[in-house]
Length: 212
Image 1 (cartoon, rainbow, N blue to C red):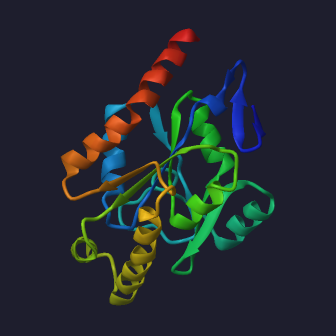
Image 2 (image 1 turned 135 degrees about the horizontal axis):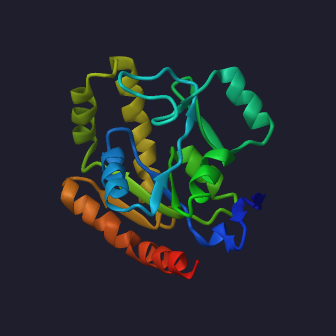
């Protein structure tokens, strides 16, 4: 396998023909719930596991939810060119490694990248050519309610997330930044929009799989 201008290729099948899915949205927008449902319903997708320097939350599993690493490890990997994108938030580093994307594409699946706004901007400067989906809450007030109900945020971290969400939603609403913007006010409707948008990719992958 090799990486060429952001693409990965394996044997006879060009992995650049499998367009990754970049999904983005404020913490509390419900994008993780939508992704879990998509992954359960469609075997052709797999989630790229991001790296982070933050500490695991309760019930989070290393290598499943994130690759939890030290800042020193991550900075060294970035310096070595091992990451497609990376960003910082609340003093912690987050990023998508080439190996994480490679692990998905080796299986012949569409790679999902669940990343932050800065990561989206970074990827737009590469040749990866993914599909871009933004998930947003119906309002900032609803987002605050959801985050408070988690009971995982301090007042300081909550304020930081809400402030960041304002900028994220402004970028998400800007024409041309995303192929699809989903207002997640109803889980079933939001999921129907996501699955309908991805239907062509699902059908195309099924056809490619049959060819090989």
